Each structure stands twice: as structure tokens, then as C-alpha cells.
Image (cartoon, rainbow, N blue to C red; front, side, top):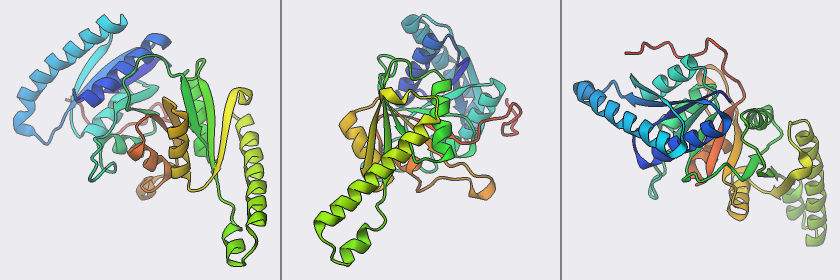
Length: 296
């Protein structure tokens, strides 16, 4: 990991992300860039906003230098936030984008349409969404694996970024015993249904381990969790019981009008979990990939 882009709006949420990015940069010896975007829609506030942003960003950089003993670069851009972030990531050749969590509201937890959702949905960079106050390198990492190319890409990128270290590793997988409902309707005995589910769990565990052996992971040091049920709910329950400080999940990137993951497992995890999440698109950025947007 050579280049880290941390986006901040100076909220407490994004300040946590900046501190996590600084910790990662210090441990990896990577270049750290702090980015603030002044929304171009607030035209009458641009001049005043730019001046205040300069002051706030320099103060944040000074805080990072004092706390982590590393320098950082600062950048202020004008435009639609997600476009500006992706443009900066391309121009800086960033390996990862680090952002604060979206605002969580108990009455209406809206994730789709937020800046971080748009960055993940429309970009090709790994995005680390930070929920927790960082205190040390990640010590307990859970991989959400659905045996797809997307989840394989996510695991590989987490390794490539150097996030694993000596962390405790877990593999989480949900399985669906497809014949269970038919057996219930056919009034098959509970004992036979339970035996069938156990067989399916063993089969799913075998498939997961075979899949994991194709990844750059030491499967022998991984704790395996294979649970019946809906994938998002299963992973959420495992998170509650195992308390990882990072969840790694792949997003099923598509092209054109179909490129979105509303309703997918990744979206549900990003919307609901309170742990840090590394969301990794299957497609990685090419050197010339970026939104075509002028920077002022």
C-alpha cells in the first residue's frame, strides 16, 4: 500500500476515518492525502467555504503529524463530492479510499444516495468505511464469503493492502438447505430434517474451505463460521458474537445502468453494521480510470 486517500467533511465520523487512514499510512509507510470537497451547488458559499476548509484541513494535518508522527498532503476540490473523491483517487493513484460512516438514523437509516454509497457504487477503488475510533492495527478480521468472484477479489485486496498482519481471521458463509421447506411441507420428521441440514452444512463448509484455499489466506489460522440463513442476517449475527474490528466484503460491480448493489448483502452490511467495513469492487481501477471532471 503506497497511497491512501482519506476524505473528510470535518465531522466526528470522518475524523475517525482520517485517524484510521493515518494509522494505516504510518504502519505501511504510505503517502497520505487528506481531501475535503466543497460542494459546487453551494455557489454563494464557495469563497468563504474554501477559506474555512483550508484552515480546518491544515489543522487536521497538524493534528495527524503530532499524533502519528507522519506528514500528509492536503487537497481541497470543488464539485459533486463522490465525483471529486474518485477523480482525486485516480490522479493520486490511490490504493484505497478511507471514509467515515454514513449518518445512521434510528427512524430512517438511509444509505443509498449518500456520498460513500456513490463512491462505492460508481468507483473501482477499495473503500474502507470507518465506524470505530482507531486505537491499533486491526486485530480481528472477518471475511464475508459467498464463493463469488467478488468475495474472492475482496479477500485478495485485503491481503494486498497489508491489512491482515497478525490479526485473528474469520470466514463467514451462509448456506441455504434448499429441500428443507419441502421436507417440512411433506411432514418429514424433525430428526430427519435436522440430519439433512447438518449434511448440507458439512457440504457448505467443505465448499467454503475449498474456495478459501484458492485465496492468499492461511486457512489453518482461520475460524470458520458456516450458518444457515439469510446471508446479511447471518453475517450480522456472527459480527455480534465474534466482535471483529473489520469486515471484508465484495460488491458485485456491474456496468452501465445496472451498476448498483441496492438490496445486496454488501449494501445491507454497510448500512447496518457498526464495525469498520472494507468494501471491494470486483473490478479494480485502470491507470486512466476516473470521472472526467475539471478540478478548480
